[in-house]
Length: 250
Image (cartoon, rainbow, N blue to C red; front, side, top):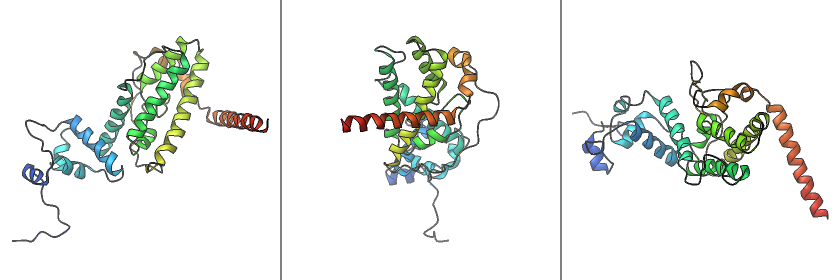
């Protein structure tokens, strides 16, 4: 009878999972896509992104890795589902509003804090939210949901912003969020270097019938003003520092 070496991994089954104290997929707790994605989020929250494999995830769920492929085609689809699930948490935040109720400043602040809470809850996942390929050029991480882009633009229009001002605000808002939150999660141990990215989505851009503001402004949203935005943001920073210095000298 062959001996099992220290590097050999015995086959995982329900009995093994019971002995090890893990929860077992069964008729009471069936294995499905949502459970796999939730387990993936738990794994990355605990161990980071680089170690996530279908085999390790299967082990956590008490099944063979091949069992997962009935619901998830592979690691790329799993990562995309994790990003989608985490962004959906922003929508479920009880402090979020779908339209300005107390002015545009309060509206934007609530959105910003909603994304920050998700970043702090999932610091190891947020870099993936920031770097995962988007569906269309007008979707700028971390606000990577068409629903949130539409909500943001519509909210500012309600508060008197022109199309040009709303697009500029969207660009500035996403740039601020991305830079600040990536820096913040990096202090929590998140890896924010080059990521193990999946291939960009292929095919046509998503339908925009339910997003009239995004559809109308898609060309403007797709324009690249990175250099101008960087210079303007730098000038604003210098202006704020000058104001602080002047107040200190006074």
